Image (cartoon, rainbow over all chains, first blue to last red; front, side):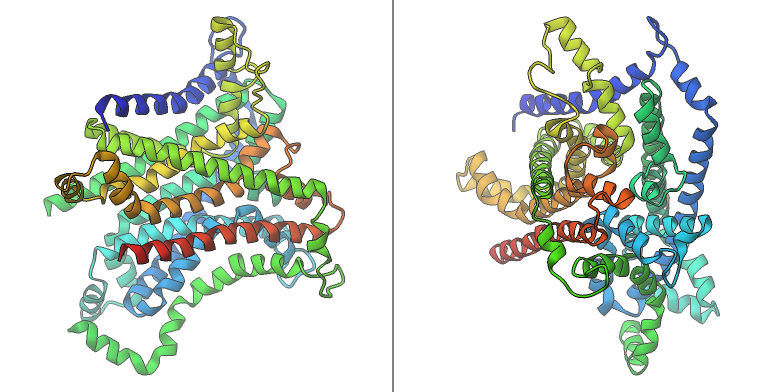
Length: 260
Length: 292
């Protein structure tokens, strides 16, 4: 392919991706008639619901990440160490959430864990929070498992484990002080990606009726004109920050390895 | 051989080893498999719990048929266009002789854009191509082109296609760039030595090698678009007749008037996603046999 065609393709692509970003930024500044202003942003930040819902989603994201790591890391480690024959099955299961839409999963939750069931999680606010968090862990699983497993591939799990055991380490110590530092980059990448997904998630939170950031944005979008694009700018900045952090930890680790 | 020794020691107490992934299986069973099975089983049950095929037969109404057809069309078109455009951009950045920094930039941006789906994405497109959007007003003022008069409406099928492409194309780029980087320079050189033109190289060497990756990407993009609720809902509200929106309304307020019909609707969605992936697996096995 000639260089000119390549550049033309990329410029056309860049236009398609930049125009909506420029569009939302410009629109978000137009609240005051005739001049550009930050009025829409001020309005958003003055709204207490913004902070309440954002804080709620952020809390859920952190719990999702911690629970996800506790679930995925020991599993991926154990499969590599003792159960290589189970790997295809486990890998297939971790990819399932990419194929089963989130709306299907949450519909199942609502019917399986309703107030008249054996585990009435949707009966209370805290129960529904737990259910929503488990839903987010499920959504995050494909990314999380792959990130951790890629990290594990680069180290000799069996030798490291035996070395640690012969020095008297228990399973907890092996996990925290031998395995975790070695797959930290993968774990952090998975964590930031999960954060980016969970913060603005709409479907599960809306159907479980929890006061999360995604449904808040949707509600504002249905009722206001200038605040929604301001929210979009904020959401884009958050996504960008999460992906930027992933790049940062990856680059940092490469640097470390090159030194060693 | 520490690996071997461990294996031999492991054999007699195999069941104990499986306990190590018990938490994982318990979680998956509770929060992924059982909820999905509940829907699948419910699709074949009467409200009283007996077996029936009525729910599936009841799907055969005009409104629901249209919803499925629109959803499938939307997924096929956005997956097809997303794959094609993402592929062309990826080829341009890998083989187009552009500086290496651009590739890194495109990858980072794709990582962001493929995750920038849902409610905010809808806002961005409303601000750009909506009735008072930047591009709409600009075209009207500078070229007196009225998008609406030309039949384009963001809150319609094609508006949804354009919006979905914003996350479909980057997803394709993320999947396909590693595959393109795996194409060895020697293959191209060997083809050139044997007298192949650029087109022949792509048609007879590169594309057959990339075929499984392309198919996999298509299946993933298809599923991605089929299940997208937030973007469509924030863009068009509950009006647009596609399956995920219909399902959303059904879960919220039982608009179909029969909870088990909701199960059947969902079951249909699982079947379509499943069929797409079975097709992918079958074609992939066939193409891999070819490669050998």
